[in-house]
Image (cartoon, rainbow, N blue to C red; front, side):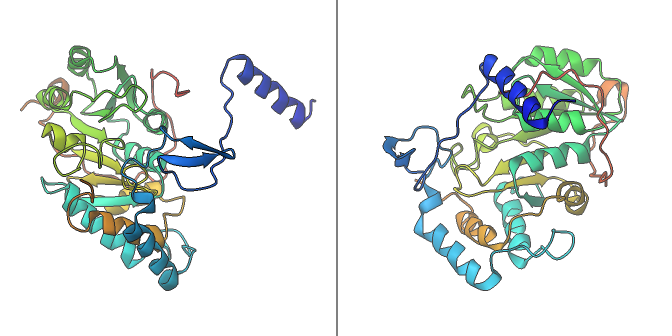
Length: 323
């Protein structure tokens, strides 16, 4: 039997041979337009700190103040001893700011990857078919794989194909999932068309707007505001334009605790981050310049179920997530 070192060397060689090797870049300062990377002073075009809020005095000052009150550790998971008034206050404010059109609840997760996995495993199941854009983020792809649901992938932004696939749906419920802004290509999803197709078939919609929040819309609420649409589930992030870490999920139904139980195996962020994020959404704007699916019952908003024990993968034809 070969050694672990030999196995690792073989795997690394295979990755290198396929052109998949990546080299970490070392930052020795904040991610600003001009920063130091690997000891060199360079222009930075690849950061997600779109609005420069990661170094905004109001954000960093709130973080320092929270450290003095709450300390640095969470003390436990959100389900045990890790939920503070900062978490719940932030979630209420996120629901108000991003849910003025009816999103009545919000859950704050430690990472975007965790949020998408938790939401998809909570909503999807054997009675739900998930329809996913072929260029969706890998966190959505992994969430689809882990959910106990049939997954159908439609070609990128091909609403005619989506319409045809929804017409063939054989489960009682359907969920259409798409990025709002596709980060690798930079294009916007046709959200008005996508929502219209989904509603025509009685399907729910979930939009991951990680790259839209803070950059699109008259008040920075993202591609949903930019297009004037209302998805059933909205996933946004604080780790890009808002200059920190963490992801939030807004829903039109009661379901915070079921989703949290599914998604908080990893501890959520402590009060430091929650405080500075509340500063970013405190004034309600970013501080910057018919018939059921396949003949089934009529469309209803998704009721979040407790699927904390769900780990089985459903049928899936989603392409790999090696982007």
